[in-house]
Image (cartoon, rainbow, N blue to C red; front, side):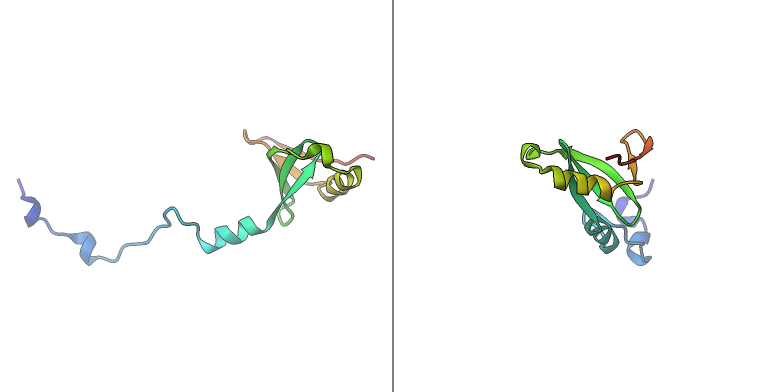
Length: 97
């Protein structure tokens, strides 16, 4: 059986591929910055205009102060976008006045 001190430290002499730890990479930061949070009815949705998708972000605590005009404008903005549910299902949003 080899002693610990006699083993070759191959990781020390071979360049290792660096992996990303808990800090996000620059590309992940750019993707995060391209999304916007929209208030629609009683919910907040994270919208990605580039990919034309949106996801539920959480409850809108300020829903009582949401104007009908802003609500209508946000619904028109995501018309035709695909909602992605946590279980993977998808549904296309269609706005009807």
